[in-house]
Structures are given as structure tokens and as C-alpha cells.
Image (cartoon, rainbow, N blue to C red; front, side, top):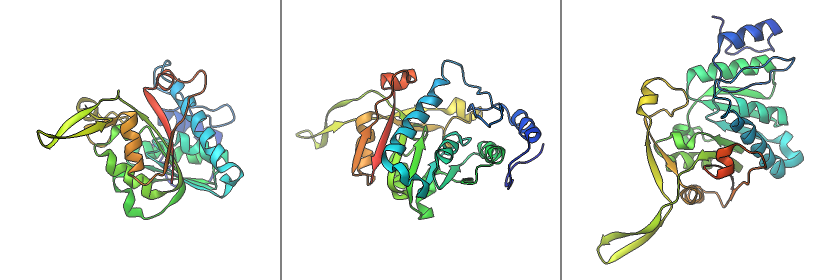
Length: 264
């Protein structure tokens, strides 16, 4: 099979058709132009999640950066096949870098860059757990569909915060709130708690090689209040939960998935 990694120029229509077939199954429904598309392998009732995410991300990014977007570099953390990185590149960001730990997803993303010929798009291997070591700050970061697949969300959000200069857009599954109080050192000493992190065991999917899991089998998922608190302790001064538009994917509409804008 031909490798599309580090292809410098746009592929021909024949090369694109062949690559779409060879690299299937695809997770995302890419529009590659000239009537060429990839077919998503997710169930039809779930596919609406992609358009909802894209609309909300573009709405937040456009409202914040406006005409400045052409001078903005973006880091898409956990970019998967590059669907949202491509959307931001097409939206007009100066440069979009997709960071992805899985080699098979990175290979698809490299193909997408070559198939579209986007000059402001690049992909490289990396993961959020070690992001702070890069010591580079981007005005815009995306962290979509990743947080609930990591074992240490606080470490990851601190790394995301360190990489963000102005705005980060986060999308994540959330769990129901749990609030109360607990003993804190002695029976008579108590502290209130707000929000929760739920431990999710993805061992079966992880062992089966499911590329939609995290890089560890045990992960954690925050409640909305826990997410907001962690973002504020990760250096973000303002946190806003974005309201989904009418007709949004059902989980976003019901608040079981959220998109949050976090400003430095």
C-alpha cells in the first residue's frame, strides 16, 4: 500500500480515490472536493455529532478572533483524522497543527492534508500528556472529544492551558453532578465538594484495538462543575458553556456532551 506521509503537493483525483478506499474504514465524513468524500463508519444516528461540533467550534472561534484569524496559529490536540483541523484551516487560520498519538489516525490525517492540498495544515505525532514539554504557546487550541478518554484529566488540562495563549475550545462527554460534604481529617471537620470525576473502564475496547479509546484502559469523565473548576485551576480566567444550536446532536442538546470556551 502506498504511504501518503509527508506528501508535499495535492494528490491527483485518482490518488485520492485510491487512498480513500485503501485507508477505509473512516471515522469522519470528509468532503475532499470535486465530489470526493469519505464515508463515516459511525452509525447514521450518531453522525450528527460531527456537524454539531464543527458549527459550535466555528461559531466560538469566529466570534473571538474575527478578521484576526488569518494571523492565528492553532493546535488541535488529539486531532484524530484531522476533521476539525481541516475545518479551521479552511476557515482561514494562518496555520493549523494537528497533534495525534495513534499512527493509523495520523496516517489518515496526512492523507487528508495531501488530498486537499491545504497549505496551512500539518500533522505530527504527540499526545496531551506530554504537551507541556513542547513549551510552545498557540493563540487557539482545540481539545475535542479527548478529555473523557484520559486517565489524568487535571494534568492534561494544565498542559492544554500551558499551550493556550488566548482561547481553548473543549468538547467532552460529561456525567451527572454529585454534591455534598465529606469528613476532612476528623469526624468533626468537613468540607463541601462540588462536581465529580467518574472512572470509566474501557479495558475491553482498549484490548480490541478500538481507536476511539484513550491511550490507557482506565479513563475519567468530569461533571460540568468539575470541568469548570479544573479549567479555572489550569489557568483559564473565564469559562463559558456554549449553547448548542437548534437541531444539534441529541447528546449536546440534552447536555450529556458539552462544548466549553475557555479564555486565558
